Length: 379
Image 1 (cartoon, rainbow, N blue to C red):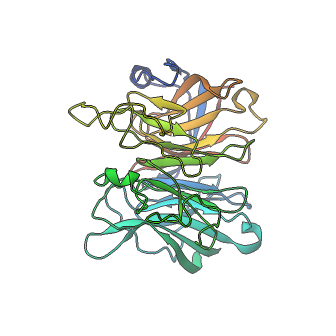
Image 2: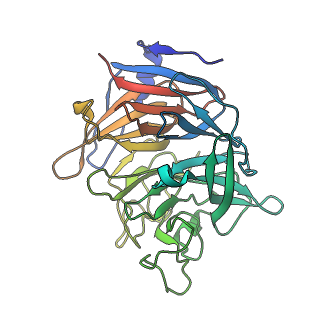
């Protein structure tokens, strides 16, 4: 089932479709389309892969949304499922989601992963677990965080895991679609980014610690469905992307205690009707996105490029797109604002984007026959 293929040509349809989704960013930038890239299939036959992590031995860990965790080699070899993954709610957008290595993985063999956890009846919610990776199985598994409350929904679970430089863990959480007003309610985890320690405790300097009616894990709020997050390679600051409705996909720099607007302000519109949502696109006391897309490209997965291997990419932010089936490269000016957007058509739903140890970008495509792809500039 595994095969390798280098794609050197793109259909006119794909290129035109990517270009047609004209982007209106903070400065109203039109995107350029670049099909002069080399895209190689490293592995295929994955069922809706969601996340990947590079292991010190050169292999990758890849999650599949139905609830499987596998080893994958750069030769395209895909292992049997790793034992010990807990039962996941594998319906709609739910399932086994992100995976991240402990900052001290070399010493403790510990990984962290997020998943849609089933509850009583039809209830479910995003959860985070840690476990030791021992060959073909997980041991010492412990759920360290559960989104509150669990609700009956199949959508908007989030959820990316990012370790900060201080060792604390950021977790991005969706508002579960049917509970969008809860993104503004500090008494829930819905539509929030939370910050916890490696054992799931609350850092003492979290912004809402001690505030009545607020959950102490919360870092920032007013998020819709953040499915991408990463640290800036120079500043160490957290960046995230989130889905908007029919437009309004956002790039944000979530700071402690800040409100990022959903659903009070947004550049998106109601599905189907196109009606306005909330109070407009701006309001005092609510943060603006650094960049946004209208119409939506359906953002998922993001990575800063920090390698010297391809200097023309260094410092850029790469963002995957599901609906638009592409990777967007955002280039920044001296003022820190986006000055250009370049799009690389992929022709499949891009779920995750990571920089590899070899300086290439690696993508996961969220399909029944999902693939691990290697993206580099054309030679």
